[in-house]
Length: 172
Image (cartoon, rainbow, N blue to C red; front, side):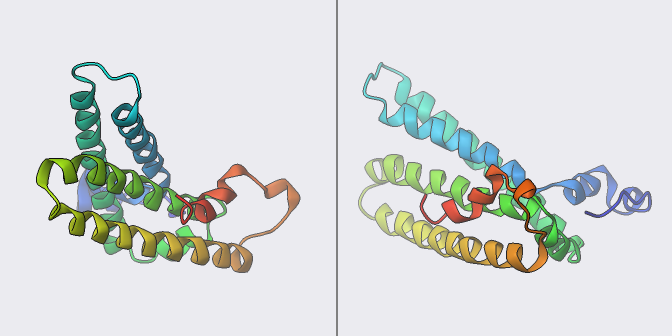
């Protein structure tokens, strides 16, 4: 990955440096936060206030996703050469699957909470989000293994659980 360059700090500031060092693995936080809101929403043992807690965690998940997405967009737009480096990195490329899986939790909670709250007109919005997520997950599920076999060193010692992240994202 790119090495630390002291010239970056004056030009882009501390936030720019953080964007440069931001990796896709942060989207795994969205996966955990999102599934927590889904589990609380669908828990069979409901009590008064649990749905509000679930919605609050869902809103937190949306905020985190937007912050992570903004940092990712800043990283790849300010430093476009970082994206090919990230794809060729031995572990970071696998975490691209966490983006679509984290987004899938937002899509699910949008369907669970948004449709009852805003009516059947909200179905089209949830369906559109689902198609966007399906496209991204297929792109990651095909593209990352392709890059893995073309750019990465394949050996039994290099096998980790992270290899599953890109191919599991279309299933999610």
